[in-house]
Amino acid sequence: MRGAIICIGDELISGRVAERNSRFAMSRLSPLGFEIASSIWVGDDMKAIAGALDQALAQASFVVVSGGLGSTEDDITAQAAARHFGLEIAESRRMIQNLKACFLAVGREVPPGVERMAQLPQGAEVLDKSCAGFMLTTPAQQPVYFLPGIPQENHRLLETHVLPDLMRRFAPQKVMVSQKFTVFGLGESEIAQRLDGLVAGYPEVSVGYYPVFPAEEVLLATRTSEPHRAEVLLNELFAEASHRLGGKVVAQGEQSLADSVAQRLSAEGLTLALAESCTGGLVGHLITGVSGASDFLDRGLITYSNRAKMELLGVEARVLNEHGAVSAETAAQMAAGARLESGVDLGLAVTGIAGPTGGSEEKPVGTVYFGLAAEDGVKTLHRRFMGDRAQIKLMSAWTALDMLRRYLEDHAFLHRP
Image (cartoon, rainbow, N blue to C red; front, side, top):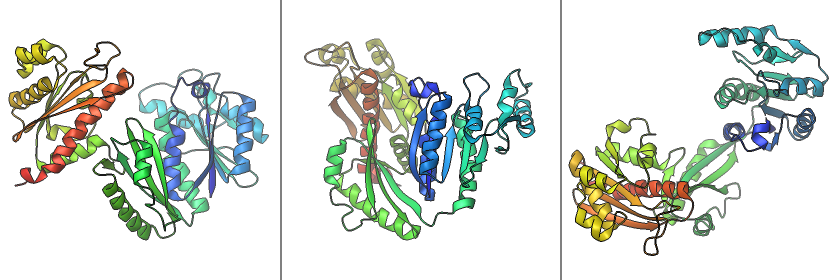
């Protein structure tokens, strides 16, 4: 069963706001067996919206529309839908009740002008308990779901109303089964080369490559009426892919690299302290994005200046003078100092030149050193990254976490009781 998605808003086609709703909708519809014929973006324009509806309805059995249901003058989706389907605009009592309930829930009166959100095409079915959102059904029995553009409300209505309604209407015979994993440290072309022939003999299985900086996501997927057998097959293919990629797989499924590191630290009962310079706390930000990080993360220090490195981490003035703040020697003492000063199991450090200024012929922009201190000694790593300041910082933070991940995998047996 095929569907189409329409995203409406001048802010989207101008690039002022990142579009999030179509990707979420596709990620939820595809596993249930629904194919997406197209995803169409248009501005707040009556003719453009009508053209998008014509295109979508010619391709698909259902349409999900996002955006343009607010209370301002440029929110014209309801009027455009009414005009397109030849319906009158009428005030929806149900939507008025919903709006009052929404504002009452946060202790506010319904502000003036918001009532225009209740002006809907006559006969529209208001989605349950929504402050915006309705459905129309075409004469050909194609449901068209109109959802608000605010991602939180959009995603909630998709989960609670659209998906259950589609399953009741269409109940696809085949579902999408997939296995996603994240690769860090290899480019897309090298990943594809290493996985060449992986699905030979399995024409029903596809391999997709998706760059999500600074990593690459790989998706093994198949449509099937036997999901359990498909899961077994994809697990086998994943195991072979992981072997071919030689330790570059850093996460599986919806996990992130930080999730993988956090899971391993918790399982081993290890504690961690961070010492960051050029990343400015980004490593700590990534790791504390994982719920329960307080179980293993003791502290994170942003030691940007030489004075901070000396006072808080015990880095020697001699090392800074002889080798510089961006050096293997400084990274090693930063990691060792973070571990010793906090009394934890592991100290992880990063120091480098994120640019665009500060580089030299000897140490160009993108030069970064990493240190990892543990009971068996201190290891260092040197990398040179390309890109702008934000990219270098993100690459550095991921590399630091990946260095920790590799250590934990290689030394797990040392920490088991």
